[in-house]
Amino acid sequence: MPLQAFDDLIPGQVALGEQLFSDTRLSDNLTVACISCHDPAKGGVDGLQFSAGIGGAVGGINAPSVLNAAYNLAQFWDGRASSLEIQAAGPIHNPLEMGSNWGQVLSRLREDKGLVERFSRAYPDGLTADNVAHAIATYERFLVTANGRFDRYLKGEKQLLTPIEIDGYRRFREYGCASCHQGMLLGGNMYQKFGVMGDYFAGRSVTKEDLGRYNVTQREEDRHVFKVPSLRNVELTAPYFHDGSAPTLESAVSVMGRYQLGRDLSTQDIQAIVAFLKTLSGPVPQAVQP
Image 1 (cartoon, rainbow, N blue to C red):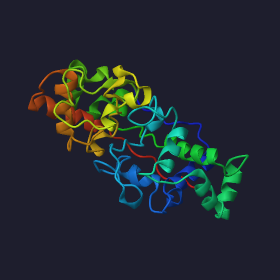
Image 2 (image 1 turned 30 degrees about the horizontal axis):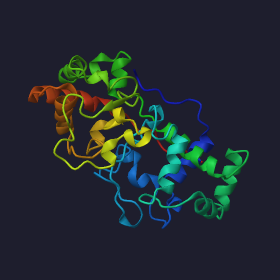
Image 3 (image 1 turned 135 degrees about the horizontal axis):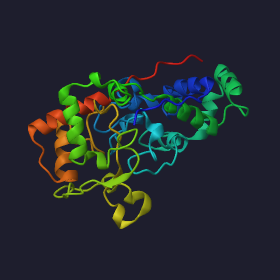
Image 4 (image 1 turned 90 degrees about the vertical axis):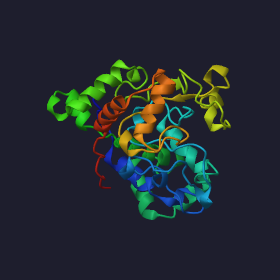
């Protein structure tokens, strides 16, 4: 399905969210902002295996892209946040990320009279924790990369894809990739075990992050289960997987073939599928005015 931008967003709230997304006042030591790990200009990520938070603290899971995140069934790899608003509060309180709290954040923001006035215009109850989270989430809803080549292909501009890209799309469907990477995001709408056709975690020291959705539900069947990531803009978001272990798109496709499809993909398979995946990039919406 082609991506569709949201058409009901309030510009003033989007603009506030965009400002807050780059605001280091949300972090304890004034060094980290949302954009530090989720830069829209870099595919919505930071290009690192594991992101660094305040004081150089390093997390244990790869930062997912913020682009098109509004269409995910839930947020984070383990789906522990049911909405973008809930997700926005997570990094603020995480000691490895921003290490702050709402009291500290609001105290700082309220010293900015211009910002307070803008919140008063955008929200009836002005500058509150809920409205800060809502503004950030609204900006994230704005970050839909619609009208890329694949979207236009789906809408009828068949000449936009080359023969190898179309062949890659065919293999992507026929080999079973689309069983999990489906819908508007080509992913993001279901959970799946990492290692359906083989034990991906065999012979390695399993971390808490490797447990995936099990950390949320404590159900044995959710061990090593993760939200299927969207493939939108995937050429821009290396390294890949929750553990950032695949440095290139080619290596990620090969691993997926082995552990999710139970087949060793040929060089031709990988080249064609990667060519198709690169058609999934779309333009990032331009900055909005306050």
